[in-house]
Image (tube, rainbow, N blue to C red):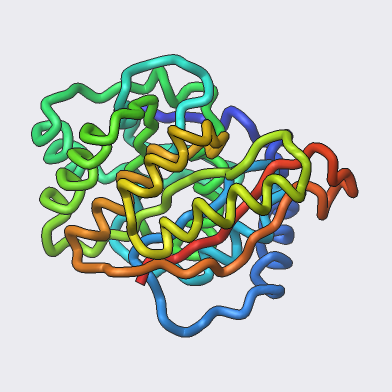
Length: 266
């Protein structure tokens, strides 16, 4: 059995099962789901003390599915441009979650690439989302995809490939992303909310242009772009901002923040 063990337990989230379950329970007690579930969300991936509540607001809107695809940015620079985990299971303090090997095989064939775990070894952007899935959907499988790819056409191809390989299978997608990094809160709000306007309209080209021309520090713009293309193919026409927050809520420091957004596609 090829098992990918937790790399960031005890730093980004609690290392003990009971403590992690309690924190997740507390997060979801403070959420008010809209009632209309979504097949695709954007959720932040910072330490739970900073962005866990915002992530819970996004996850409270996600539709139960057989498999949840996790698209996360590559912070380590290791591995391939598109790295689909070759593990059989991932492990967190909540236990093991099975990888959807069948969907992985189809997607690898469609993209004409090989599975790669190097990008996943120390990467946190996907791992921090996994306990939310285990807590809400203990029987679900997952498919972790780490992206270093930043070319628009390649990201669109990935979105198309996901839509085609998923077919009628019950799948939900999580695009893992934080927004502005290490700038004053006032600037982060202005930059992030403008970028989010493009996401709300599923304006992929406008969003990509905004990120490129303004040199925005949205780390998961690749996962967001691929997810928007997937949504286009699934005839999903808009997105809603559920919550915007920043690290200043936890630290009190408004001079140097990271922005977080909970967004659902509908």
